[in-house]
Image 1 (cartoon, rainbow, N blue to C red):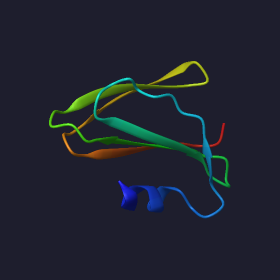
Image 2: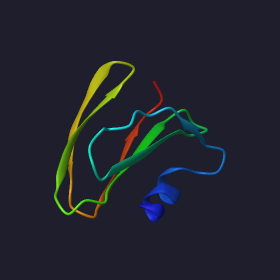
Image 3: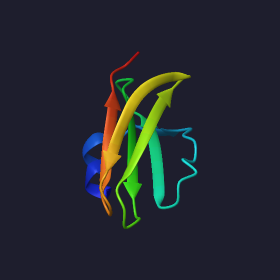
Image 4: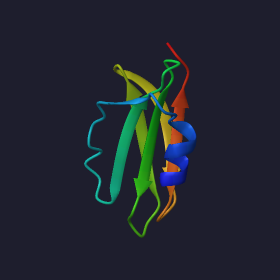
Length: 79
């Protein structure tokens, strides 16, 4: 997850609010990059794959599956 974060979140980015997924084993961090794009990194530390749905500003952004012990990086362009 660290490599994904450093690749997708350049210097000058800042952390923005993200909600706790309330699912055991999932951790996340969201950032806004200097170009205005937003990044969400989700780590699944559980021993089972998890499917999560994402929303931004109340709009459904889709769902993604995260393998056991894996991580995903989601990136949205500037609004």
